[in-house]
Image 1 (cartoon, rainbow, N blue to C red):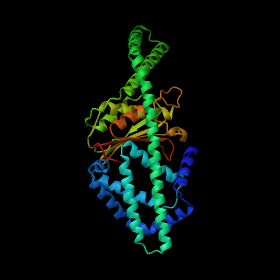
Image 2 (cartoon, one colour; image 1 turned 180 degrees about the vertical axis):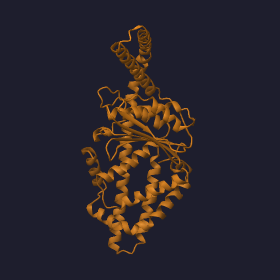
Image 3 (cartoon, rainbow, N blue to C red; image 1 turned 45 degrees about the vertical axis):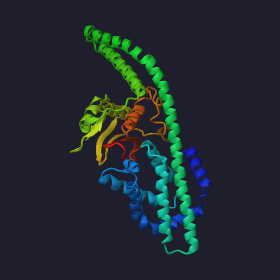
Image 4 (cartoon, rainbow, N blue to C red; image 1 turned 30 degrees about the vertical axis):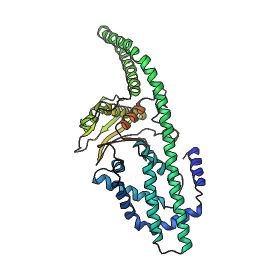
Length: 387
C-alpha cells in the first residue's frame, strides 16, 4: 500500500476511534459469532428480495446468488478477523470500487450495513459471555461497522473524483478529435493510395519493399489512433445483439499483429452461451487488450486469452508473461491519455474501460503470481447484476 493510502487508513481508524483493544475483542468474538453467519446472510438476501430496486442490482441466476452469498460469508469472516491492515483496506476498497462501477446507490450500502450490524449485535447478545466482555464486543462491532462504511465512502469519493477528471479529459480529447480527426483522414488516405501505387511500380528490391511496408504500417497506425480518438470522444451507447462471444474473440485475436517470437494462445471452451453485446465495441475491446499484452511482453513471450461462463456473467481473461504492472501505475492504468510507453497514446485501455462500463461490466487489472499482467473483463448477461 502506498503512503497516501496508508495515511487514509490511519485517518479513518482515528476518526472512528478504533483501537487495538477493539481489534482484540473482534478477534475473540469471531469464532463465537461465525455459526450465526449463514443466518445473517439469509436475512440479508431476504431484505433484498423485499426491495425490487435493490434486487435488480444484487440478483442473478441461482449459481450467481450462491456465489454472492459465499462472498458475503468471506466478508463477514474478514470483518471479525482481528487484522485491519493494508491488505484489509485494499480488499474493502476493491468492494467499494465495484459498487461504484455497478452504480449501486449509496442508500443500499447504508441499509445493508445496518442489517449486518443489527444481526451481529443480536448474535452477540445470545452468546454466553460476561457483561463486560459482551459490552466491549458491542462497542467494537459498532466501530468496525463504522470503519467499513468510512472505507466504502472514501472509495466512492475516489471514484467520483476520478470520473470527474476522466470527463474533463474526454472533453479535451473530444475537442481535439472533432477539430483535426476528420481533417487528417483525407491526407492519410492520399498517402495510403500513393504507397500502394508506389509498391506496384517500385523495384522488387527487398530494401525498397521494406521501406514501403514501414510507410504503410505507420499510416495504418495513424488511422487507428484517429479512430480511437473519435471513438473515445463519441461516447456511443452499445447496440446490443445476440453474439457468439467465442467466435468474436477468436477472430479479434487473429487480427492483432505480433512479433514472430510472441505466442498468443486462445483456448475456446467446449460450449458457451451467447451474450447480448455490441459486437463492434467488444471486438475493439479484445483487440486493444490483446495488443496491450503483446506490447507488454516485448520481442518474445506468451499471451493467453480465454473466456469463462459465470452464470449471469461472461468473463474475458487476457494474461501475459511481461514485467507486470508497477504499483504506482495501476490506479491510472485506464485514464485517457495516460501511458508509460514512449510510443503509446494512452487510448487503448481507456477505450476498454469505456466499452466495458457502457455494457454494465467491470474491468480489472492485476499482476499474476508467476509474473506478468492479468486483465479480466466481466460482462453481464443481464443488465443490473453485481459480481
